[in-house]
Image 1 (spheres, helix red, strand yellow):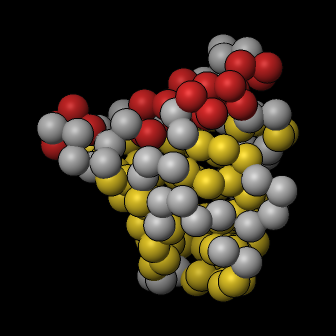
Image 2: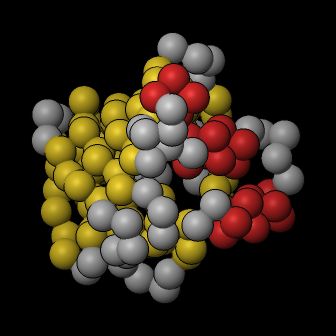
Length: 141
């Protein structure tokens, strides 16, 4: 796996620690998909957003996540999976410390997440970078 990166914030939102690793990058699959592993601290919320380009399948390896997809809440526990279709609002919150695998198709978002998660990235640039990558914040999921 590549080195884990710590994210203090995504977009304009301040978040507890998130560590990312990219075991399968898009370049290795000719852009068809990427696999990202995230270790997420309890209480961390990925704010409501819509991905306009990618479908994402989230598999919870360990922990507990509240997921809201198109205003429908669901609690995931270890071993469960949820599909996040492109264009559908979603929000995630770690109830407990969690380890997640995310299959992203097509690939590309994993590169953006690595930049956004880099502590050297200016916080004011994060939301703009996500918007350019087709990830838009929404008022509620």
